[in-house]
Length: 268
Image (cartoon, rainbow, N blue to C red; front, side, top):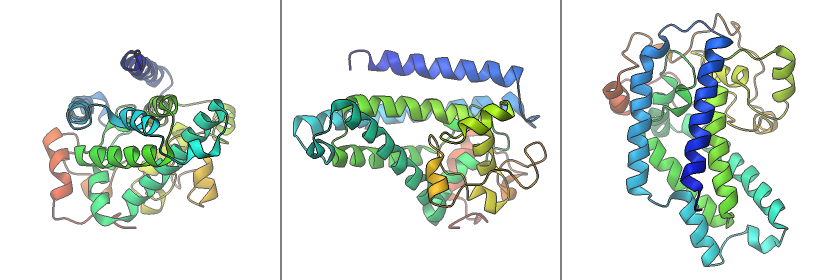
């Protein structure tokens, strides 16, 4: 706990810088707008970070400490060794994130929030950090509730949040992995080629590959798609109804969930 903030910042900036370098060296797609989007995407990150700190000063880690102090939760009842408890908690939390992601696509009013993430007309490391503030708040409430229900160890929560944040940047990065490496990694993990399909303008592709960390959830629940119909280089990123909109404007992103126009992807 003493080094939590330092660890988080080190991991965040380390992975962010690494993905920046890889995107420059081994990019997968030619971006239409490139880094001109970054000021808005990263501006949203700053806004969300401040909001979470104000509303949830101790966050999910604080919830884990509370659960531990009050001896509540399901995992302690199993009386497993500490290492297995931590690993099980990380896997369960990842499964919850998969279910939450699916829910944000299937429930119309939740999709209105989540479409801010999908409206980005390019996909790179910053897309993995681009979420509407209300979605961030709801996600944090879900995470805190699950952490308390599980009685998840503090270490598990810290590890999970760092892994989730790092994997979000990795699997949204515009990088071209060697085919053999991608094929090997996707057996367990979500690679950039796997998740890029999820950002296609085609509805049936958007509604696939919901995982953030582990690919087995999509395989298990039949939402896995191996390749995009048009191929990675020819596929169009974003939402079809917003291709002519100022999707890289911060105020536009904040107002998007409250627009009257219905998305074709909504509630599907």
